[in-house]
Image (cartoon, rainbow, N blue to C red; front, side, top):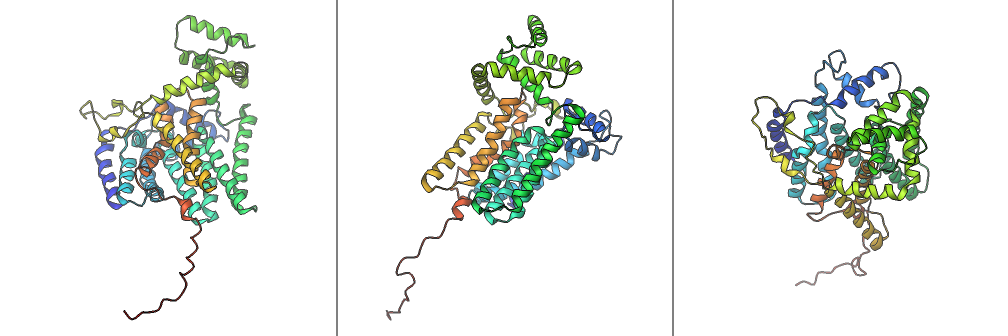
Length: 434
């Protein structure tokens, strides 16, 4: 582990100085959100954790026009701490030190992952947070100590408040907690803590409802769903003719569908009830479920052909660094279709374990739930930038790839009952004198 960690540090010294800390168009919205949060109001676009961190680590005046990128260095620190958790996860899947070290090096050097450490976006902390969450799950599987599961429940809430699309993690944690409840056949503190964290989630959504007339984590999801309705072309017979006419007028200008969906959504949000776009989208999906399902299949196939590295570009390279810049970590990139493949493989491992032994392989089941959950969120509610939105599960793909490359020692197998000794095993052995 130490030499793998040393390699990652050396690689970081080579990699990070070449890139500037990037302030993206999303970054400004986090500063705007903090202005509302500082007045004790929920922001209907951004959940509170990242806006608070961005300003907390900014010694300037909290302005999106004049800030210092201290948060990026905090993200980098957290990422290097998460490497230890990743190593512990890898130890649960393979006994071969060379495979463990190779996986840690891949995690610490893969460009699709580490480029976010110098980007003022939620992806870096989400990547590290999911690794820490999986570490807590696996420690609970191994030790049965309730403290690990209780901590996992709180991390689930924090990750959701960091990035609204992480809400699927509540389902993952809920399934595992329910399984723990069933196995123990009694109500326990982790179950109670999960219920409290669930209430806190709905409490925030209710606060959004009271202050912004929107029951949800972020209204951005409504805009994203509008994108799918326009691209699927299933809005023509909706009852809200004003929105239909607005879309058709922009289509007549031969504008791209994503651009039309964004502009129409923004336009009607500005003077209409906030839930109007959501109602429009729900009506279209309700009237044309088969057409919408076909669109999702086409969308999934398109996403699968997208490179993990597509978002990453030389626009972030510092001045004076020669271009085009080719980084060794760039070659640790795959198409997003590899994520779908890993989800299928883990599901088959879980299924085969259940058929053979009538037990749940919780290590593989958690990997499957996490990868499938993130994939479903992006397919159902993301309009683009999939290379960025899938980034939180890239480390889990590395974990799967390397764990399947060697002998896989499963946590659940460690917990199997020892075989009964042979009938003669406990009999005394007499020295024959030979």
